[in-house]
Length: 66
Image 1 (cartoon, helix red, strand yellow):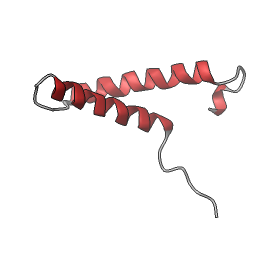
Image 2 (cartoon, helix red, strand yellow; image 1 turned 180 degrees about the vertical axis):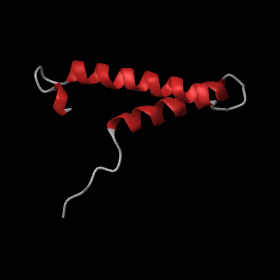
Image 3 (cartoon, helix red, strand yellow; image 1 turned 90 degrees about the horizontal axis):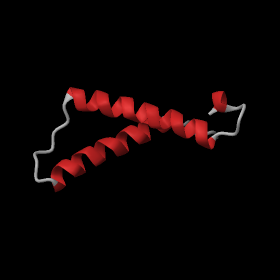
Image 4 (cartoon, rainbow, N blue to C red; image 1 turned 90 degrees about the vertical axis):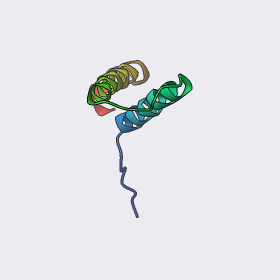
């Protein structure tokens, strides 16, 4: 029986960044909200981090397989 991967690696990055966003707001004593702009910014930053990690952590020549 094979197991199917239900989420992509970038999903984990986005979720972690959203949790960080809420934690920073909470620790700063601000109301915890996530605007549409915040979400788009998080997604763009996550995508950048994801591709940077692929380029650093993946052996040269097989980046497209990551």
